[in-house]
Image 1 (cartoon, one colour):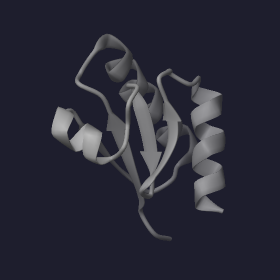
Image 2 (image 1 turned 90 degrees about the vertical axis):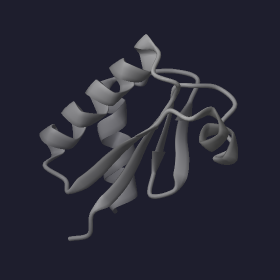
Image 3 (image 1 turned 135 degrees about the horizontal axis):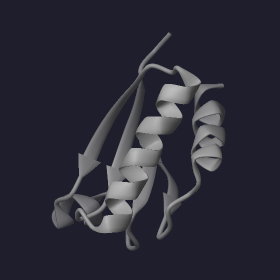
Length: 83
């Protein structure tokens, strides 16, 4: 079972923090093995090609930008990435 690499991307705004909490909750509920990192540096955010924050990347692929998905939505994204 390989570890999923999840990036929560955003400068640390309220929505970014919510996304991080929701993502941690989704990972817990699914029981998947995941490494969650926060990307807050604007240069890094731009380098990832993200124009709207918050954003969520799973295993190097940007899955969501500019909004906070619900916990069930995040779980669906993670299940798809794990498949």
